[in-house]
Image (tube, rainbow, N blue to C red):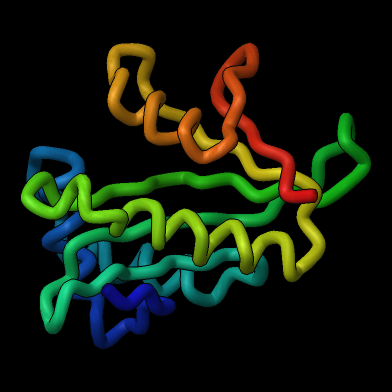
Length: 142
């Protein structure tokens, strides 16, 4: 498994994963325009996870300044691994990649959100050191 920053030339692969994640198609031209905008934003990182040549997962993270923490904080906006590839530590590899990056650039913690009904995602985060908070999950990067 390889995790690397996505490039615009990989937009088609990411688009397919995003449609699977959302369980509905999105307008491809609009998606590609938003991808370009995301790639141009400082503090934003979008990664693809590969199993061989096949893109099997993605994560979209960004850095925000938290007034309450008086520090930069990482936010996992979206995180997805294809069903057939779950349980192979692909999500763990992506999470390690993005949290290491966030720590390296000075973030004090990282937040991740998932629906209350998504127990598997909650367990995934808790097994990797995230704690439930009032509105989501967080984990210190210290």
